[in-house]
Length: 403
Image (tube, rainbow, N blue to C red):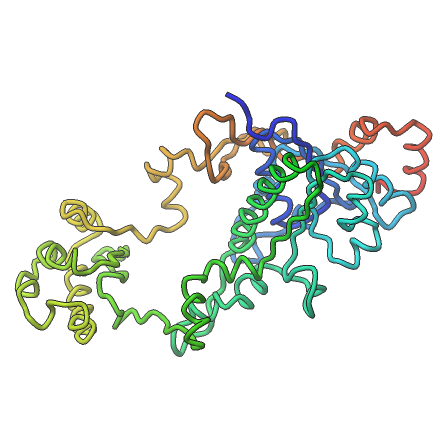
């Protein structure tokens, strides 16, 4: 088997999640990635999940491990004399340059697309930001809670009447945007190979967030009105709703073609009269009686536990899924069969599981290749590989470039 990106070299000047995770997924596919961190390391290294309500005594940042596995790390203080010049030197011999520096810092450190292409005309410049590189909000910091979740309209679209807007989970928008940036980079590499010219790829939290609600926005662009929130008690389609079992577990029904499934659902629930009732024999009629139907379905589900309904739903060939907790997924046999988790052996943290690459290619070598590096772990070997002399290295060290 061959790794799809074997021979591709990536230079990452970034922190937090999206840009680093893009580089990490490229490493999963066989690329080599050098991570440029400030002295002290990427801000994500010190992120405490307990601030989000966790109550665990973590030995290390497993979040950082997820988004930085398999890389080499060099610490560079870009504010010190020679710092930005060192990064430019490293950029001379890479295929992909990934960054999430805000525009003013890219300009100050001479790490703009024009500056990188001046020294490496065939590089793919991968740019990530919250709001893009132009426009009135280009300089605005953008974390996923703000740019992806709130500004994009996702948060408001999920807000129920008389309820506060719900928050996303940490990294939810970041990891979705990662896949957009990665897709752009892979397409740009192919274009680079075809034309011999460097490329610039942009991906944003705002744009990705809007893409995730694109099904609504396609209609809103014409209707110019906010889509209605999902009403659990009176959905437009009672077969597209979540119902609670007697043991407190929930089941999500997903049957967007209700006429095809209506009779089967009625039979499965033991509501045979509904299948013959003229009041419910069409989609518009069921919408007119949605509160009554939803209440009746809910009452039925509350009569038995989840294992009972799991067997019945599958027996009748209905489309559904359990509303899983995250711990539920750890031992889910389907998740295990799909190899969604992967093991990492870490020199300090020992052996632990993390998320595997979220896609596979048949016959290709794709997967987690090792732990994340310590901050600056590979500084010495990276600068020597770049051709710096002992005198140059000593001068940079004396200037405090390496921290």
